[in-house]
Length: 204
Picture 1: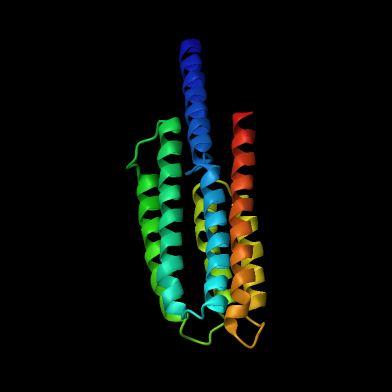
Picture 2: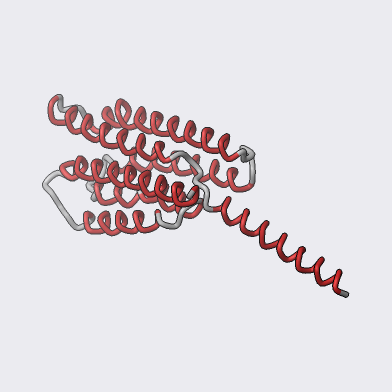
């Protein structure tokens, strides 16, 4: 009887240990924090370049979209993929686990949606800045779901600011695009700082 009770206790301890390992793995970042920094800097740089081309050379919105917007998305995406590969190698995780397959499909869907969303939106009188700010929260919420819940706070602040921007009506909707782009870039940099702090907390 005593031996059976010891086996049960050992069994329960093993289950608790496995559960702790799984929970710890769930809290691990999907990508390196520096990938957020790269995204932030890319968005800020693309916003500044777009504003300059628009006002200095009078380029139309679609030209700026193809010459600045799409290259910016490609640069940010490549940095994100590099950060993903680096993180997974360090964590010795499989590249095609159920968790990572969800990430791949989510990432691809977000990029495709953003490409079409922005392309068709820039020809309208819609509140572009507010919609872009709100749309920028999608990856933040996605990473909050897959890694650290503290990112949700960042996402909801941006969502609120984007909602407020919807009701600001300048003479030209593009006047708010530069501040919106800089704000989005800063929010991604802050998300990287949050992720870095969470990693340090886990690593002790």
